[in-house]
Amino acid sequence: MLLGKSVTEILALIKNKKISSQEIIDYFLRRIEKYDQKLNAYVTVNKSSNLSKIKVPIAVKDNFCTCGIRTTASSKVLENFVPPYESTVTKRLIESYFFILGKTNMDAWAHGSSTETSDFGPTKNPWDLSRCSGGSSGGSAAAVSSYLAPVAIGSETAGSIRQPASWSGVIGLKPTYGRVSRYGLIAMASSFDCPGPLTLTTEDAAFILRIIAGKDEFDVTTAQNAVPDYVKSLRKKKKFVIGITEEYLNGIDEEIKEAFYQLLKILEKLGHQIKKINLLSPKYSISVYTIIQRAEVSSNLARYDGIRYGNDRTFFGSEAKRRIMLGTYVLSYGYYEAYYKKAQKVRTLIIEDFRKVFQEVDMILAPTTPITALRLGEFEKYPFFGEMMDVLNEPAAIAGICAISFPFGLTKKENLPIGLQLMGRWFEEENVLNLTYQIEKETDFLGVIKKGLKNYPD
Amino acid sequence: MKKKLLSRKDILHLANLAGLTLTDKEITKYKTQLEKTIAYIENLNELSTDNVLPTSHVTFLKNVFFDDGKKNERGLNLKEIFQNTQNKKDNYFRVKKIF
Image (cartoon, rainbow over all chains, first blue to last red; front, top):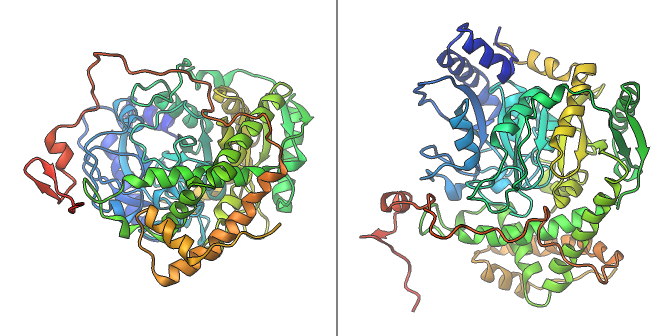
């Protein structure tokens, strides 16, 4: 009866006294007990519920500081770290409708696109346990996909919400940089990091964004822009001009391309206009992202000295060390101009490129990933494979614009979810949510979400 | 494009700057992997960036200040500050001798 219910639906059930908040939480705890041993979506489950008002459970990626609940970023460095303060995102969730059901697994420090670099073991893809759930918010994506939480919070630096959402067959929204506060989010690359929701419905994504978005005096990079009622504006029947580009279809799996063209026809049928555009090749985004992200990683991870909290630097895993090394290199004397500064200049070109295109179109439609979920063990073979896999996610992350990934069909032979994404202008989450909602209403995402839930009965 | 080669000395220097201790095997592994990554990112040189300003921020914010005299609600008390450390003596963190 509860399986697959959205947060909006659960809240209605609680308000109408059909079920209590405690019963809902117990329901999810039972499901975690039943399935999480094989999926490994959670690092920590919070069994300390003591409810005084209406609460719906939410899973939160383990890089958000939660006061009194262990927060590890899936690294042994922070194995026993219990934050003395609450992140702004979790504070706003707790103060509204949510109970933090648990902390989800991730690539250690969010370094990766598979959740395999977690020091607590990989999260398995709910669609095929021999495959990755994607990453770095892989635990959050798997938890929602298998309904071990109705919704989850992830964080994205470049692809870490959209890519696992795509591989695990759920919705993932990366808001505009500065739309949601980073205060209390363990920093990976501060000029990219964005918290955002992973959900089964567009409405839940809009509902959660409205709660977590907005100016925060503890994060100076948050924007003053007013937070619209994202849920209410879903129902407006807006018509959009949607850009598509060959640059984002080169080397993409044939079945993903088919899904892309299938959706184009549907969008035209719904009265939207499709327009061909030109964008810089995303291959440059791989380089810009690799350089700037690793530079920021090397400086953000410098604070982990084991003195005030956590273990010392000998506890860093292989991926963190690899990134710190390259980051140190591109920032060091003699190379700063050639790499770091050059990358920041090309970042300007990428931003200008989007700005120009967004004068012609409202949104850009593209695949989220070049291929569907990979088998466990593939990523470790290559030095920056994650960055290559996130090639279609990096341009939006570099420019700081908003983007949403949603499921659109399954591959025929392997039965794996395909993800497509919409990228919108800065602070136009309303539009990408609105169009995703139209697609959901028209196609039900080709039944992906319902099929996924069938594999995880109560 | 000519591949940039790194020496073992370069790798040890970077590790030292970053406060990392590497095994012999790691030194060899990171040397190869860093060389490969650096070879890839050279593709940025295909783009001309003359007269382009480097990005400093992506959402056009300017001069954000914390108001003077405002209560700092972020502050932690002593118990909170020390709750995650084992290196404590009285109200100080203990560190290794530097001098």
